[in-house]
Image (spheres, one colour):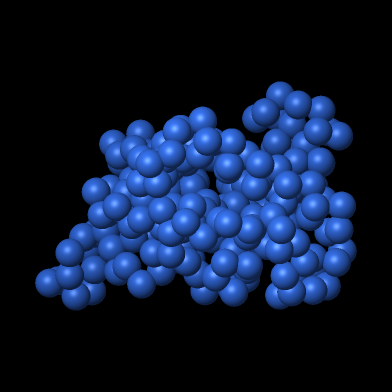
Length: 203
């Protein structure tokens, strides 16, 4: 999608930008992100039923200790990326940028079994690895968004477009998003500025 729009794909570049804002070494920013994501993924995978039952409760506060400065810097990066044009993956971007009328929010989803098969095919991994990635990634992503923003990442109201990317070929998904992007560039209010960014959630 980023290639189609000829804009940057913003994902792993975020820690680099965060390191500049916080004046910390890039290695430290990367390590912080990996440690936070890894710790949360391990905890969520271990206690997934509890997370689903008490999704609004701060079950793992130690995972998020001292993260406020990194969160604020990440939000700055998301807003600046959207302002200049980008395809942004995750980081709660659909929530951070939900009041920006010039951003298209997209969620890719699908039945768990088909997502496992798709993960095996695209990642060239075995079933056990694909299932483990699915078990840890979804709850940790959802808990992250709920913890910081008190919203359900699965809420379709956060997105302009929700696509089952296991039932529709990925190239077709790109075409659908591109079409929706063009529509956002021609808003009902002709005086409104055009769409300039796309956020994406999901696998």
